[in-house]
Image (cartoon, rainbow, N blue to C red):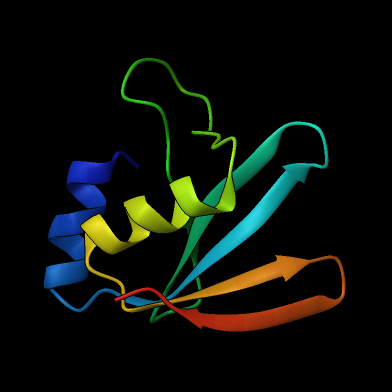
Length: 86
């Protein structure tokens, strides 16, 4: 999904959680969103059908904040923690 669609669905109460997940240590981060019915959506590029990748965690969290999330779960392998972004 694109950022615009995610924002509309967030405002409608569709999402339970936003996760920042590393693409690989060299590439950066991507955002994944868990719906209330346990499906997962991924932030996609506006052009094309690829996942949007961020060079830094700060960049990913900034977009999550623009969508409306106050908290982001950061996951690196088995390690995970929740960060307040608002």
